[in-house]
Every structure is written in C-alpha cells, then in structure tokens.
Amino acid sequence: MTALITRDELKAAIDAGSVTVVDALGGEYYAKQHLPGAVPLVRADVDEQAPSLLPDRDAAIVTYCSNPACPNSGQVADRLTELGYTAVRKYREGIEDWVGAGLPTESA
Image (cartoon, rainbow, N blue to C red; front, side, top):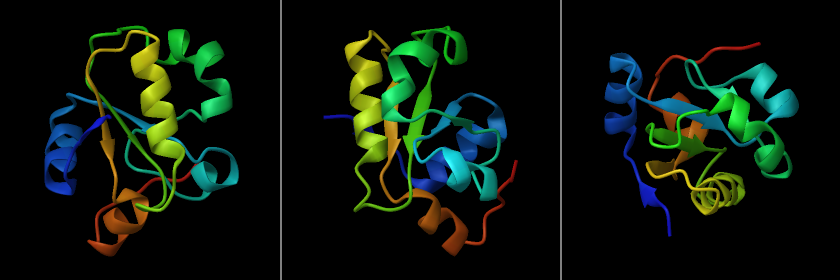
C-alpha cells in the first residue's frame, strides 16, 4: 500500500519545490482545476508517459485525485511503484480537501 501524505506536508513540499505532484484525474478535470505545478497522468497512460514525465525514479512523487472515495490516485501510485519509482506517496483526501482548505489551484 502506498504511503500517505497530509495536506500540510504536501503544501510544504510544493512550496519548497521538493515534490512532483501527479493529478490522476486528467482530462477536463485537470484542465479545470489542479494542484500547483501538477502534471496530468491517468492509470491508462502510466506505462507510456511516466518515463518522460517522471524521469527520476527516486524523486518524491505525490498522486492525488478528487477525494478518498476516488481510486485513481492509488492506482497510479501502485503502478508507479511497480515500475520502480521509490518515493511515491498519495494525498488521499484529494483536491476537494485542498480547495476546501482555501489553498490555491491552477487551471490549464
């Protein structure tokens, strides 16, 4: 199971520039709203796109989707781990929690 990261830990990592954030919703959801600096990567595209989007397999990566009920972030995190990524964590509460806390987002 993928290790979890809290909202406060994730915000600090984003602010420090020490993490790559992966939006596991993709598509129109990503275009409408995503966490600062997040890259879109859905489960179906992980094998093909991860090597170019995430070239450093030892870099800190955090996946997220909409909320705890959404399985996407866990699926992407699990696949990245299977591909040899060593520092993958999941922001289980997702973008709904982030927005609910009044934190900034970006749009495409």
